Image (cartoon, rainbow, N blue to C red):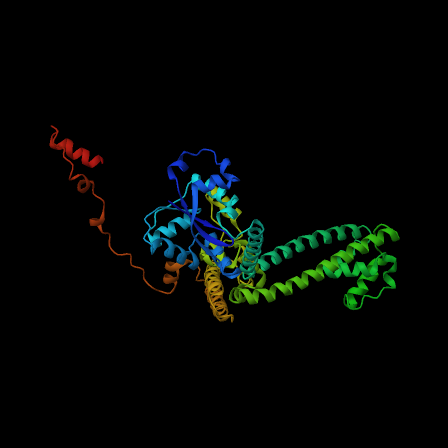
Length: 461
């Protein structure tokens, strides 16, 4: 019996001296820190030291994935296959055991007994392998841990869609936060100057006007150039003179100004995050961004989890992505399922009305599936496919709208009749009817019944 043992420094092949004794052992604690006892069970049969950090990192990555690296393949081939050793091999991983068995035909096993034995070997490794101290093994383990961490980090950084997922989530949180702050500001300042909300409807402009005015008595002397047009400024000043709001003091004004500054700062950061998202999306998924826009593309990727996951989805899933609650509710109540999810926010779908929305959403989802697969698996960074798909959808919208204006929305038969075509359904084919006699022809009714009863049974069937 042989045992394969992997360390950050080397591959080691141990021979189990007394396999029957090993099977009888119930408690391995006497073998944990006693090198004399463990030497009675195993001995070093072969050894291969790694050449450098690159070699050990490649081997570790392969082992983590349950695969057999080049160095391990050579080691086993040299010490087992070429020497024609006909013994079983104990390994620590099931997937690795299957790979070794498939590649070399070696009978590999993995059970709790050998797992405990490997723990004993690990605790007595410096005595079993000469030339390696405990400190050396710790340093090598630390180096391998750092190398694996860098590898995982590098592997993750290649997936730039992770940054997009975080950015779009933050963008949506900022939208909610700004809306909450804006609602609070309008309610707060509305007690003092309620007429302003009707004159200035834009949230950001409203905030800037509040920040500039403060107490409404100062409105006459305040200059609002660059914030609102002249006629709006005139209306604001006129409204401030006849306002029905309550009075506030300078302390109230101070906190209103602080809230206004917070809203303006968040809006500025939101705008910069919007530009960042647009630039990143055109680099990561240019075709999908071209057809539905950068923000909707980012939301689709965030909902799917990654660009590759989104590329695996069929068009029907992309079409209702984001409307899962409505879908399951409709399925439970046995009603019509939703026709669109996140892609409903697209400008292409917003430009159509009525039944055309459902048709365009279906066509758009199909083109989105094509574009995202090209982005995830293709090498070209130019949005060629996206532009072609967008042009197709625009032409499709024009065709359906022209058809709707012409009144051709009643289905195929109605359109054919309005065009003057005669729809001939053909003659009735009685030969295609179901006949019970044919089905029952193979049955035997010879049980003493007369012919009339047989005919009645056939008819009633």
